[in-house]
Amino acid sequence: MHPDGLKEATHVSTTGLCPSSTFVRNSDSAQSDVSTDSTDAAGGRSRPLLIADIQRAIAAHFGVPATEMVSDRRHRQVARPRQVAMYIARHATPHSLPQIGRAFRRDHTTVMHAIAQIEALMVADAEFDAEVRALTFAFTPAAGPVS
Image (cartoon, rainbow, N blue to C red; front, side):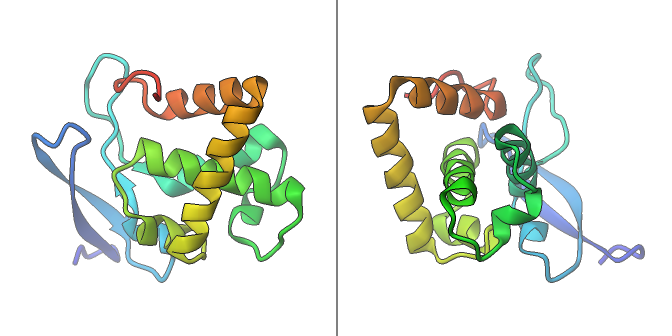
C-alpha cells in the first residue's frame, strides 16, 4: 500500500510482453481495479486505459451524463451508449466479462447481451457499424481496425 492511500496494481501490457506497475486509488469504486496499459501512436507507453475513460468518452460522444453509464436507467437513450461502451471495453481491453460488468454495476451476462446487441445492430445498420468501429479504433490505435 502506498502512503497516499494508493495501492500498487500490476498490469500486463496489451502486447503481453512486459508487466508494468501503476497506482490506483484504493476505494470501493468498480473502476479502481479495471485498467490496462495503453500505448500512444508512436508505440510508447502512456497512462493506463481505464474502463472509466471509455465510459466518459462514450457518454460525451452520445451526449449523456457520464453517471448514466452506471445508473439503473434502461431508457434507450441511456442504454444504447452504455452497450456501446461495454462493447468497446471488451474489444479495447483484455478484461473479462465479470470485470467489465463490475465497472458498469452490471452482471457479466448483461455485458454479453450488450455485446450481442451492438454486433447485431452493426450488421443491420452500416452507419452505426462505421460509428462503433471508429469509436473502438480510437481506443485501440496500435491494434488497428476491429474485425
